[in-house]
Length: 270
Ligand code: 7PJ
Image 1 (cartoon, protein in one colour):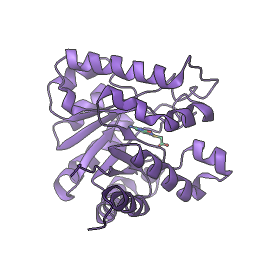
Image 2 (cartoon, rainbow, N blue to C red):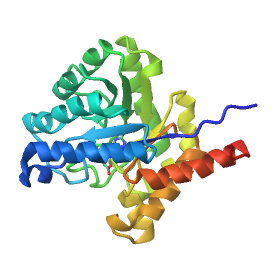
Image 3 (cartoon, rainbow, N blue to C red):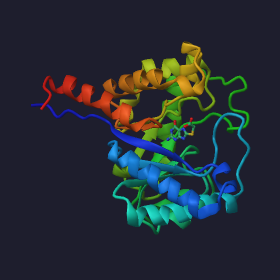
Image 4 (cartoon, helix red, strand yellow):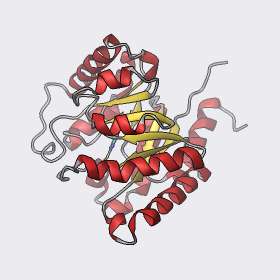
């Protein structure tokens, strides 16, 4: 019998600046903990904590602000909720502060390009997600250009992976992500999704994030709050193409979809 791998679901837990203004940090942490508990109840295996907005056009967040948002939450979550913790950061100093806690993954949209990041991670056993991005979040959607998007993304990921492994990071710790929406036109995004299997030649597990992204808005004409159906379709496609982890906002609905995928791949529902 062949082993059927259905992706794990990673729930997105954004720690937004607004949540600080209404009632202070404790309330904000409590709220985030409750949200994490709900995601676990809904079937999430991971929660991904991000303190920096990386949406197109977003302003950079200061180091101190990101630390204040992320570190106390990681600390509390690691002792109170039974879930694998992923931290979405591209700053070496943030990684340094969260790594001593029970963090399972560092999810870096800049693929450990910040100074000292690779050397730091080489001292730990945490998993790492290396994501591809063209340009910087503030400007990345201004005319992205590739000679061939799948090849270029694949070459970049292979190169970053080689840098990690030569620094002593075991291959088994590395997940790869083509970075949907990060310096990519709609066409680039759909070419990547259509040919996602080609990234399996890198022989690493893939982490995929398309939840509510503009590539879904552009083909459906829906605003961000009405992209659930499109997000589920995208997650299902990624699952059928062999993604290992799906990074999503809507955990419960994605888990339902993954149960359908699991039954289909197994030809059985038990
Ligand atoms: C991704 C991410 C993604 C990984 C964000 C958003 C933008 N990390 N962080 N992959 N996207 N690994 O969720 O819309 O696609 S932030």
